[in-house]
Length: 255
Image 1 (tube, helix red, strand yellow):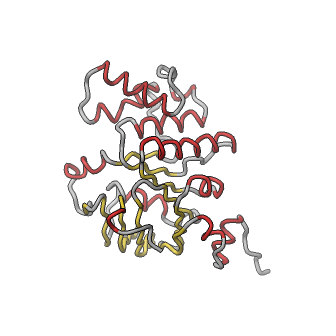
Image 2: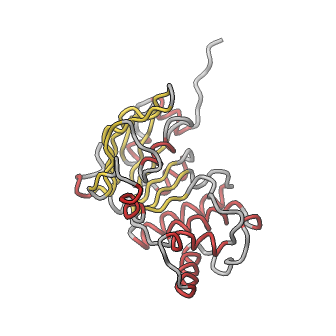
Image 3: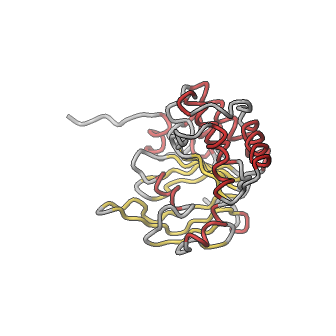
């Protein structure tokens, strides 16, 4: 199923393949990420979800296939030509990836400084606004070691949105968090979508999160997209593998 006409796709992936050593990780992935919507990718561990995510911002290069960001192919672009494309896309890494030696303000400001911003007042105001978005204003001077897991994720999210990207990629945003904190992260994902009309792609194992935030859900299995549609369509799928994944149900082992 398609997420919509090509003209409405912020990200479009066609025939993406990637081999790491002897293992074929991606085996011809086709997926459209519709502008302004939240698409969720689910699938088993080791199925290629994080590898797929890294291709979308050029951190990994495919063996074959095409990746288009707002209609522009990014496959084969140099680092210099990738830079303006990457400014359109923020990413929340799985474990936050905060710099331990930097305080909250310095971590959040890092993307601005990387793009050449040097005015302390402008940086401080942008950091304050970004932290306010994730309900952490006033925590600028804390170090990562002093933050809870949920706070680290929110600081990382503030860093992802400080440059006002048009798209945000989330790699396991609720991993390692308790259900209450996970719910607060899901609410933030939805809030950012509404507040900034941002396009979002969420990789997760958490089915509650998938159903809470996803406008569309894609099931990645054995390096291919085996299903793409709404949450209602996913839940009514007759595919036993999909039902097992949704319910967290393992098959009985033959002895």
